[in-house]
Image 1 (cartoon, one colour):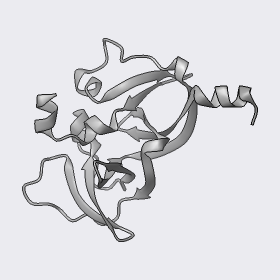
Image 2: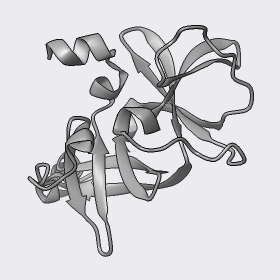
Image 3: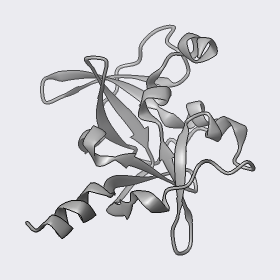
Length: 156
């Protein structure tokens, strides 16, 4: 690898893209453990609305977090087969439930922009910036904020 390749790689970040509702989101690939289809959820009594339940993924118990309520989006249709992105946060395993997984994009850090002032307030609190792609906006999800409890978010 040449010094030029190293410099180029250092200024690029890879993102796993996901569709939630009609929006396109990106999560840094360094945060993603795995991607899987959600098959069997066990509901958790009296859990917050965004906790869809728990699931067993190859012997690991994950808390399934439905990203839609966190973002203020309506629930998905019961007929839709959700997917999830496996994330570790504070030593615990989570599955972020999304509608559809996309591709991995390698984007230059210099093209990353802060949240626009007209970005929906519910979305902006969980967004870590944006990329303007050819035909759409890629909103970067702040995984740590998505996984914080409502009480933690109020304190922050």
